[in-house]
Structures are given as structure tokens and as C-alpha cells.
Length: 106
Image 1 (tube, rainbow, N blue to C red):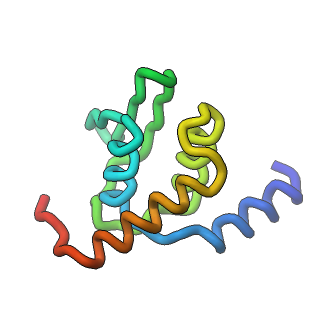
Image 2: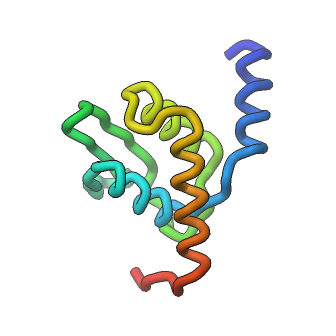
């Protein structure tokens, strides 16, 4: 990674909408992904666009790590599932909705 890419990634990470992995799960399901729990990983797959997103298995209440946010956003943009800005808007809506209702127990 060159310095321009590192700077861009750092700038993007600072401007990310916050959210939890539970909220990310909800957004991905809304976009047509199915979730498969693997050993140490959570795999999201959308057959229609031939997309697979692999994330580490974490507590659903944890905040999304910036590198995971960027990886998901890039995958969604690359396959034209959620063009630029749409993913952030969907996550922002999920965060707002979650703050209005109690979190489900796992």
C-alpha cells in the first residue's frame, strides 16, 4: 500500500458511520445476502451477484472495525450492489433504527 492509499484509507476510516456487526448483518440481509456461520468466521453470500464476504466471528454488539467496513463497502460497490454512499446511508439508518428499539438477545 502506498502513502496515498494509506492516507485515503485513514481519511475514510475517520468519516465512517459507526455501527455494530449486528447492524451490518441486518443491512447485508436487506441487500439479499445469506449468512453462514463458519469456524471462526461469518460468511455472507449473495448468489445473484456472485459475492462472498468473509468476516471474523465477533460479538454482534461490537463496533465494526474500519477495515471490515471498507472491505464490505468495496465489495458492494465493485459488484454494483450498493453504489458509493448507499452503504453508509443504509448503515446510518440501521444505527438509528437500533437506537429506537432494544437490542435482541443472542
